[in-house]
Amino acid sequence: MKTESLDRLRSRIVKIDAMPAIPVILRPLLRCLDQPAEQVDMNRIVELVSYDKSIAAQCIRMANSALFSRNTPAETVRTAVLSLGMWRVRDLLFSNSLSQVIPNNRWVVDPSVFWRHSLGCALVSRRFAEIIGYPDPEKAYLAGLLHDIGVLVNCMVAPEEFKATIQKATIEQIPLNEAEQATLGFTHCDSGRILGEAWKIPPDLIDAIELHHDIGDPNRGGPLVAMVHLSDLLCRLRDLGYGYYEPRQVDFANEPGWLYLAMQFPGLADLDMARFTFSLDDYAREVGELVATVFAGRGAS
Amino acid sequence: MPNEATLLKDETVAPEYLADPAWIRIRDLIYQVSGIYQAENKFYLLVSRAVRRMKVVGARSPREYLEFLTARPNRESEMRNLLNEITIGETCLFRSLPQIDALRKVVIPSLAEAKKKLAYTKLRFWSAGCSTGEEPYTLAMILLEETQSTLKGWTFEVVATDLNDRSVAKAQEGVYNDYAVRNVPPEFMKKYFTKSGADYRVADSVRPHVSFSRLNMLDDSKMLFMRGIDVIFCCNVLIYFDGKSKTRTIQHFYNGLLPNGYFFLGHSESLFGINDKFRLVHFPGATAYWKAVETSVKAGTP
Ligand SMILES: C[S@@+](CC[C@H](N)C(=O)[O-])C[C@H]1O[C@@H](n2cnc3c(N)ncnc32)[C@H](O)[C@@H]1O
Ligand SMILES: [Fe+2]
Ligand SMILES: [Fe+2]
Image 1 (cartoon, rainbow over the protein chains, first blue to last red):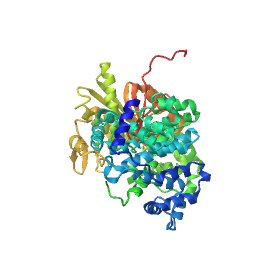
Image 2 (image 1 turned 30 degrees about the horizontal axis):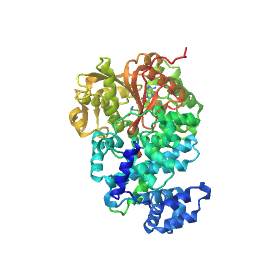
Image 3 (image 1 turned 90 degrees about the horizontal axis):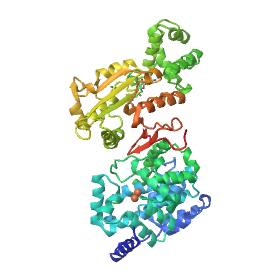
Image 4 (image 1 turned 120 degrees about the vertical axis):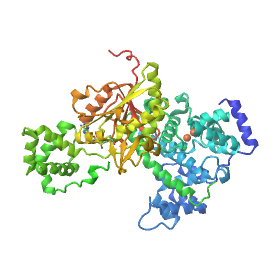
């Protein structure tokens, strides 16, 4: 989007006070996790979890759910965190804090569908990064998690029009960004960039947010954008999308993002893409469990 | 139909019995003829099925049965009977809904558009390893339905083949019980089946579009004749094959497809490392392989 229209959108968001605030827990969490896995301080994570009673309860509930339960039930936050493992706790913390970014009654899309897609994309991006040998899989995870964050802004800044946009996308079976362009004149990629800048998240994550649908020249956004773009596509094709049918045929190996990655990461040539795709059905199950935990006991909006 | 495999209990066999070296010979023979390779851990399956045949022909030991398969005058027909016994497979109508959606919403429209440009208005589908006919009838019903819209004025045929001649005979009957039709959407049920007693009979409007025959996919001379196909379904068949026979069969499929044609495998089957000419394509909830239209030979290749 052109800079001037982006500016116009920004002032519109600010004027009606539609810019969601960054969740309190997000910054310390990002800092805490911004180091190699071995060095992440478990005590600090337990502390962050304990901050928030509802998050702590969720951790314990999830640790005792069918998927993770062990012989002895987890009763304290510490045992729950240990039994879930750090990454799953992190998933919970993120989706939790992010799901409170906008008030319950402002959601235009179904929040559980939105988080299913975002978390799915985060997991797939990270897996993808690991497979091809991208040096920072956790960054890929975060980029996947945040890529559609502009949807939240849209819920706030233009609720009625955005509702119509979603309907249009569902009925015409077209990608969300195309429907947005037609009805709103801007996309969640544009509003996502604005939010990312306001939250001062790292610039490469902001690029992933802005370019994930239309990556343009792959050199601009680099591997992170390409990975998130492909992961988003894949999630939409494997039951981790926005819940409507997009009739299309995707030839991943000939997608510009794929070709770009293949040049930099020879590991991509060894990827059995069909098998990778089938393995997503397991991810979908795990993500479903997580989202169910986050939304259990919270009234539907 | 509820599968025979689930109705007929496999004979239980003692572990010592499995150790008879004649079984290895029989296993290899089956592999040679049909490409079906029974790994050691699935050996009991082969043996329990073969034991049924041994009882019928009165062979007292695996060695003696091996003789029935190799030396006796009617060895060919006995081999066929044995293959019938071991290839009874799980199937049902409308087995994979994402595949069906992909066909109706993406594949058929794209084929129709491309072929119309060349002034063709006929489609040819092939169900390879069709078992008792559920898959090819499903395809024919989908295509019939599409002749109301995307394929108005078009003709089509579904060629259906299987190694198991008993399955082929059942397929020709086209009568199914309620277990086999459990996935059929109500609109299709109403239009394309007639009730006969407790069973469901495929409607006469569907039958002329499907032709059945026995075909061993490892029979190169016969496979060579399978040409001019738009869409091939070979689902849950190659799982019985080892790498070499897979490669060979896939090559035949590739040659048999028209440019722009599609090849569907069963859920969770992949061609990775088996064929690199086909392009893997994704549809919502389903994957398939696509034979790209050849755009002039690359510069520099001899
Ligand atoms: C599990 S059934 C699949 C039925 C159907 N395609 C489906 O997916 O529902 C496998 C079929 O493959 C057939 N088959 C196995 N080896 C074969 C061969 N060499 N040539 C032709 N058919 C074969 C068997 O006879 C059996 O009917
Ligand atoms: Fe998006
Ligand atoms: Fe997305």
